[in-house]
Every structure is written in structure tokens, then in C-alpha cells.
Length: 98
Image (tube, rainbow, N blue to C red; front, side, top):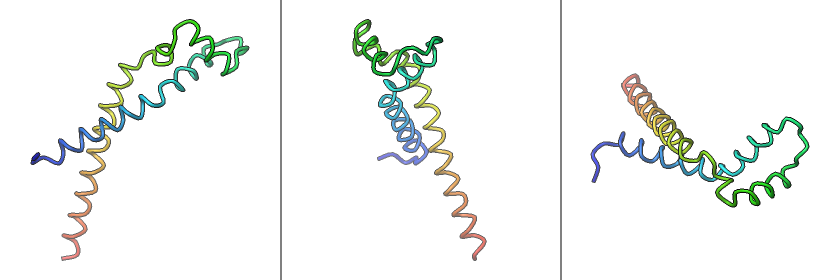
């Protein structure tokens, strides 16, 4: 029922970006904590155990809210720009061939 395809592109791109970040967030948290370990003595397995022991499952999702918001905004604009560019190039190509 929506007239504007731009609105749909914005929503779909934003949801895809948000979902992608939500799925990879635990890996990103572990990676960031390992990078912050200046001694480089803790392996990935021990680091995950430490997070679970100290903070539970929530520890793997630290900082998720700002990342989800940023992911929504960036990916919504990216998908919309990509689709609109394809439409523009297709119209230009059709006009050149007439």
C-alpha cells in the first residue's frame, strides 16, 4: 500500500543492517576486548568464559544500542542510494538507446 519505493528501500536497508549487527555483535565484543588486552595473554575461549562469568550473556552485547542505530541509518541510506542509482542508470540507458 505504500506509494514511495524510497521509503521501502530505507526501511529494508535499515532492518538488514540492524539485524546483521545484532548477529555479529558478540563476535565484535570479543574481538574488541581481545584487542584491548595489552598483555595478549587471554585466548578467545578464556575471554568468552570470563565475560560469561562476570556479566552473563548480556556481556556479549555491550554497546548494541548505538551500533544498531548506526547500522540502521547507514544501511538504509546505502541501500536507497544503490537502488536509486540503478533506476537512474537504467532510465539513462533506455533514453540513450531511443
